[in-house]
Length: 184
Ligand SMILES: [Fe+2]
Ligand SMILES: [Fe+2]
Image 1 (cartoon, protein in one colour):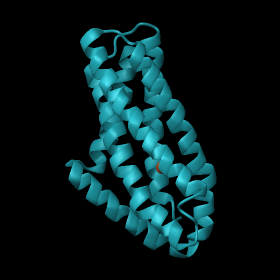
Image 2 (cartoon, rainbow, N blue to C red; image 1 turned 90 degrees about the vertical axis):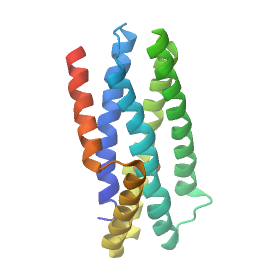
Image 3 (cartoon, helix red, strand yellow; image 1 turned 90 degrees about the horizontal axis):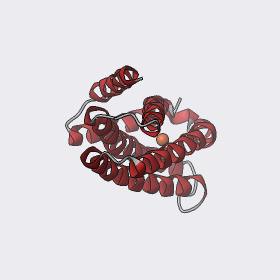
Image 4 (cartoon, rainbow, N blue to C red; image 1 turned 180 degrees about the vertical axis):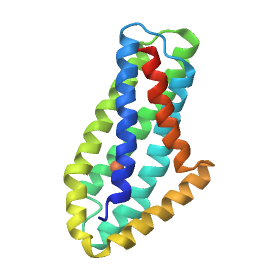
């Protein structure tokens, strides 16, 4: 399947979105969320999701779809590119509001940014999983090995730039889930 590597990323991203939903509820109920939960959440969103996963889509997957004849200046690819830009902006805002929250203890801004991130990312993942990836699986069915190899190349490059491995991010997500369950 041409989208195998990207769907695997989405599974990991969805776990973090779920962890953010838990964080949001805890913040709303007045619980204190430590730096050891907030900063890994920001790290994952800015680096794994934005740099690595969006890098794979933008530098390898969308070009493969363009080669198959899908336009890039309109239609689903143009919408996805615009949504990546919005996600990036929310993640940057969320990093600042997390730092402000840790310094001041006032959660309102952080609650608003996390809510926006969850809402935006959930609908973006839904569109890719149920629309774009379905189209891509048909268009790229004859070249799926080549597409996955291209995606893996970009993943290796991006993770090397970040000085991280995929298993670093997999353990980050596991720790996040465990740490949050202890606050519950
Ligand atoms: Fe995307
Ligand atoms: Fe994606």
